[in-house]
Image (tube, rainbow, N blue to C red; front, side, top):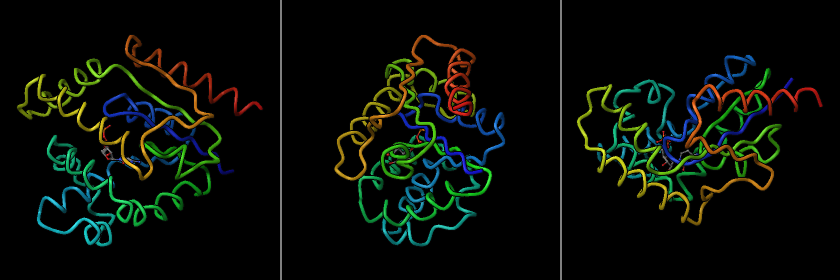
Length: 204
Ligand code: CDP
């Protein structure tokens, strides 16, 4: 069975937590596609050119969560993500992952629109910029990354603006996506809603 769940949405909306729970619940493989762009961004910060960095990307590059989940790498990721040639280099890997036997959940910005337009379930998970910035601030603080609330909010807003205004695969909810606004929702409530949507689809 190939069952594909596409989860898109802006920075720090809860896509990662929801994707991991969905993968676990339904026995699906999970790909955090943001990590691909972060890994390219990291290489660019080390001095490589963006397209060369995307071409040289290896599986091992993704297994450095600590160095990839910094605010600097997030900004670098959204800067390389504007480039169509970079996106093109990452396309096959994502599509092949989505087609794997047993099914998969992918989260990112363009999964329901470009990577998996035929996904069985499409979700667009969002929240106010302030709520998202607060969650990201707490995550970074827990990791010992010293940054102010105001700076995190500014970073999130800059990335949202760049991600949604670019020409190549902009961040937008697919027409057939269900939008879940988690601004005033606990993660448990958001997960209940997601399980309800997936359950209905599995029954159909
Ligand atoms: O974790 P967070 O939501 O903050 O970001 P991420 O998912 O790790 O993505 C980092 C950046 O990669 C985003 O700001 C986008 O610019 C880019 N990205 C993208 O363009 N397309 C995707 N499918 C995933 C990420």
